[in-house]
Length: 332
Image (cartoon, rainbow, N blue to C red; front, side, top):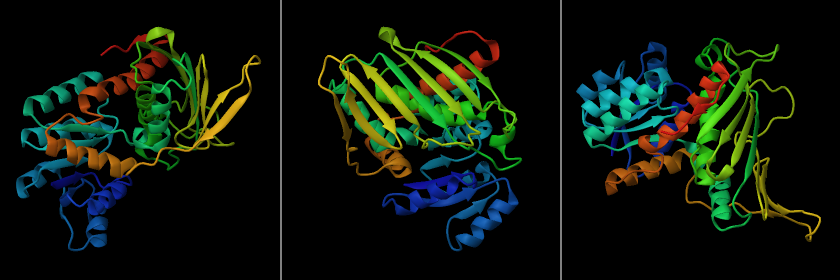
C-alpha cells in the first residue's frame, strides 16, 4: 500500500519509521506547509518520498492508496475530506477534529466514500490495557464499579508551540488517550461527564492544564480522571496510575505494572503482580498493521472514526463541562 504522509512535525518521525518497517507499506510522498520542515525532511531522507507543500498537490502528483494525517487537530477535517474526495483511505492522528459537528461530517464523508477511516488511538494497543481488558472480561474482579485514573506529567513545555498556546490542549490531546483507554478497558461507553479545570501559578500553558472529570457509565459505574500537565514532582508514566475496583477485588496500574489484589479483612489477603500479555506489536506499529489489515480485508478497523466519535465526545464533553460547570450528555 502506498501512502502520503501529511505533516512533518515531531510525531511524524515515529510514523515514518513504522512505515519503513512495515513490509506492505511504502511512503511515496510527504507534505508540510512549513518550508523549513520540508527542507529538513528532504535532507534527512535523500532519495526518499517526494516532498510537497500541500496535500492537494501531493494527491495530484502521485498515485497512492491512503493518507496518513499527522497534522494539528485544526487541519484534520480538511485533510480527511481531501483524501476521501480522491478515494483514499485515511489513518489520522487523534483527536479526530476540534468539534463534534465537524467530526460527524468527516465520519459521514468517509462512509459515503466507502473507504477505511481509522483514528490512531495508540495507547489502547499496549500490553497494559490489553491484559486488563482480558482480566476484567474473565471476571477477575467481578463487574467494575469504580475507576480512578491519575495522570501527572510535565507535558508540552516547548514555548510557543501549539500545545502550549491552544486552550484545553491537555484535556483534548492527552485526555482523549485516557478516555479512549477507559472505553476499551471497561468495554463500555459513558453516559455523561462533569468536569472542572484550572491552571497552577507556575504552569506554562495558556489553556488549563489541570483537571478532574467524573464519568458516569451504565450500571452505576463511575470513573474519575485527574490530570496535571505541569507536574514538578513525581510523575506517572504516560499510561497513568489506575485503580479499578469490583466486588471481587481490584486491578492497579503503577509505573506500568499491573497488580491484582483482594484485601478485605474477611478474606485471605491476596496481592499479585500480573505479567502483561505478550503482543505481536504495540503502539504505532500495531495501529498501522490493523489499518492495513482492515483495508485488505475490507472491514471496519478497531478505532474506526465512527467508533472514535465516542472517545472524542468524552474529551470535548469534559471541556464543555469545565467551561459551563454543568454535566454534559455523552451519548453519541
